[in-house]
Image (cartoon, rainbow, N blue to C red):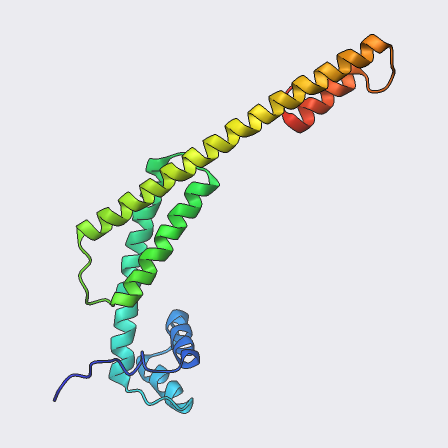
Length: 181
């Protein structure tokens, strides 16, 4: 008998597959119970198809756990603990999961594939770091320019003998809003 080219599970409507995934995650049902439940919902599935799908999902979940550990190790290697790094690590994790789900459990993912993906992530991290450093430099320069202008204005107001904002209050506000005094 020829093997079917497409899984009967993957051919199911999305809402039925979602229900199947929910039941598998729940972990309280046997393969037979899940297959019976899906048939009650109108799906034409066999116990063996559900079993194969459950095995594939578990294999992928195992690989995702390993990928998450690798992504966390990469995050530790990058070491800055920034939100950008966390986003990259989680993005890498999600990307690996999506790729894994698309190619299936039987496909080979080589160490070269993982290395290329890791290199891309490192390049992205470097770009984000450069962007963050550039933004910080721009902010510091703007704060410095604002402080110079405010200092000059305070000096002119003092020279004219005008009241208004005291120098102490001005310095307090500069520290509070710009981190400079």
